[in-house]
Length: 281
Length: 284
Image 1 (cartoon, rainbow over the protein chains, first blue to last red):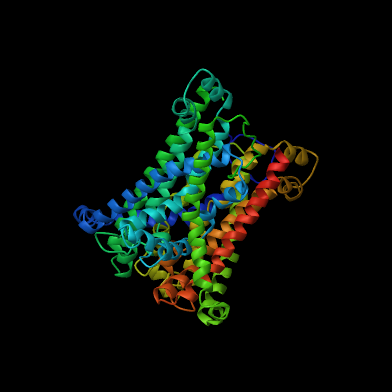
Image 2: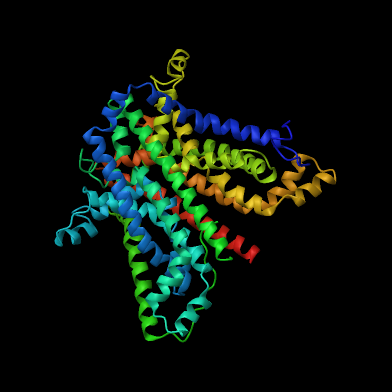
């Protein structure tokens, strides 16, 4: 059994068994494979590593993956806020149905949303036809990547903002209105400060998911090298060409990116909690 | 749990501006969701049923499609119980005991959510592929992991790893352990305490985690795509079968299989919503 410095004594049973199984399963299924990737990359020479990382095709793919995820997360921050606001503040017919539907992108397999979006936004598709008249092509361009990532990221923003909006004190808003503050003033000074940490958390989660997304993007993006090729797709292509060094290196870059995003999310959440404590909630 | 929809009491004496804003914002929200969520869902149904019900049903007589459905069910039948047992163990260790390195453990459990599905598949290739760590020794023993069913199962376990655990950990932490301690003090065994005291308290949270885990397990595409090898009738799951049929321009069949997956998603949302209402009513 574990020594006293390691854990506080408790009369409950099963510590050794459950912690043992947890660490074993975690190590076998998650940590060991991740270590294999890192070690594989570490066998490369620096020049080889840099040549793969800085290859123009790879750089173009980072720009698309990160840029599209950023833009999609920003759009989601705006519309996700509007959706969350409508769900929290207004009572309209079908509100509960809409609320339940928000999680659809979590539950719908990405391949399904991928082919569905490609069909809707294809130049011959229902929405694509209307957009083509306006001279905009979404499917098989970088815009398609953004649309797919908006769909994937939406629930992260809405589900982060909803509880924070419920917490915003309405009597403060009413007091401000009574004192003559206009709606924009109330929004900027009372509502936004209250929900901003949650909005930022949702934004970061959506961004993190968007950078790594694969299934919903590849059907609508057209997958042209240097133009509409996302980094995960480039990894798949390198694997199919048996270029294991190339795949491992790009995978390593994405893994580092994931760690950075995870770190950013933790920072944002810690900052949000500190804000709540300071506000006395 | 996500998804909060308590009853709303709107103020009655709204100004004209507030009324206009209310209608405009609701319209904007619904239009956005309609374009983004409903249109694609409608497209799946329209394409699947576009050539008639007979064609739709005929899609499910294809042996490769049937084998993909079987493989998806088999994968879920292995992955969901494995991650459920893991999730319960992790939640018990983390919520009931104080020990060093706990927050690191929680972060590591969440890690698969942050990793791209393609990278999840890739790391398994680096481990079990021909040029991987265990590649040669597996080949000597004639065991195939990559481009075979074990790889698909492992990839699915990786991407669905945190679902049950992250649902149960906060729930069990919040519930505390006084009742379990009382049961143990009164002489109940460990199993008895878990089954009679803990399980009834966590069953809705557990169900919630399990259905989300199941939805992702059946629908995973990226990670499985990397390790599967796309061998027809052998290593294609339903989402991969959708891709194969779609790339062959066999749209009716592709969307027919996709419609089954969409149905799974809707069923998941319905159960999830029911569980949330149930949990709301108990706490509120």
